[in-house]
Amino acid sequence: MITVYGYPYSGNCWKVTTILDLTGVLYRWVDVDSNAGETRTEAFLAMNPNGKVPVVVLEGGEAVTESCAILCHFAEGTRFMPPPGLARTRVLEWLFFEQYSHEPYIAVARNIVSYLKQSEAQAARVAECQRRGALALDVMEQRLAGHDWLTDFGPTVADIALCGYTQAADEGGFDLARWPGTREWVGRVLGLPGVTALPRAGIANPRGAG
Amino acid sequence: MITVYGYPYSGNCWKVTTILDLTGVLYRWVDVDSNAGETRTEAFLAMNPNGKVPVVVLEGGEAVTESCAILCHFAEGTRFMPPPGLARTRVLEWLFFEQYSHEPYIAVARNIVSYLKQSEAQAARVAECQRRGALALDVMEQRLAGHDWLTDFGPTVADIALCGYTQAADEGGFDLARWPGTREWVGRVLGLPGVTALPRAGIANPRGAG
Image 1 (tube, rainbow over the protein chains, first blue to last red):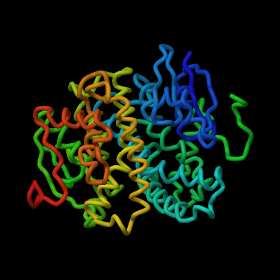
Image 2 (cartoon, helix red, strand yellow):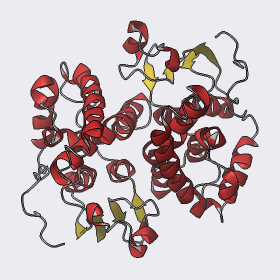
Image 3 (tube, helix red, strand yellow):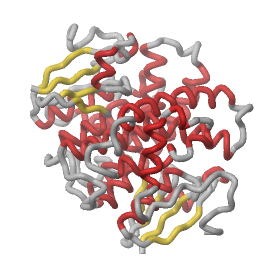
Image 4 (cartoon, rainbow over the protein chains, first blue to last red):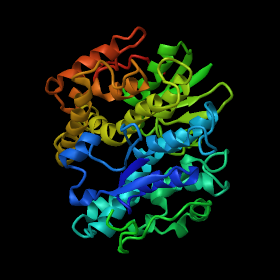
């Protein structure tokens, strides 16, 4: 069986368990808390020299890193990844958009505000994350105001990737009422059979002690 | 013929022209300078709502964005993108690493230092970019100290993507002598038949007026 090393409140880790749940792949879960330094231990860095969760260890022992690469790995050959060509390229555009223009602002704002609880100590950084995160949500809204999914191919890993932190954007100070098409889309992604929402900050670890 | 909208000094745009040159795809080039606001015009935003170069307009008129998605699009079916499976996943890991952990520090440091010339005005930001960019180069060096290419499958879009800004890291204050395996690998990538190095800051636009 594969093993997922992750943090239950991480949207990046949520992407991984979501594609596994959607495609019926069984996995073992191991808790790793990056805010507590657990991604910087020697054992963890041997799996991922970049010191980040999620990491998936395959049955052959190979460690796979980068949440969006993991999404593509497990989606290959399923309805969540279109075949090569422009259809697949549209999905990849959104995956790279997520990692470059969305996650660094929306996830980071959430971590500072709701996990580190340093909204005041890091006020300038939070403001910058909120400004740039809003621009990312504007781009999503342009698409989602008139479409059910991010690409024309039904729900794909693009939707899973972007939903990862968009569903928790309010925990970083974003009010999704400003992006109503995006808010409805979050409901559609979370309504897919087999999908469980990311847990809210402050509730007990839903996966137990790991 | 396809059209590439880009900035000749951008490593992200270099990735695009490099895969096109390596695979023998002809293209028309149009100059767009993001530091001069040319990615925020109404016409440009109609092509890419996220307001970034590169953009490739295909023969059918579809605009494709995100440098790494463009790499994957044109590499599909060539030696620069392995078939689906762990081989391809290894390439994707590096592409997402590049966009999340490398480009935001190494490219941004270079832009501030060598293009905006604001090393002093933005000293704290440059220092943070140099700290985190060095961590990214450490991760690359772990691989490249003992291997010719980033993955086991010969030169791929992973090497093209990471070489984009690594070849110009010195313009952001990084001395590649500290990462000798990486420095040698840059030479290998730039030595591939058909590859032309990214132009240096301060020389005349090598593509002319666009």
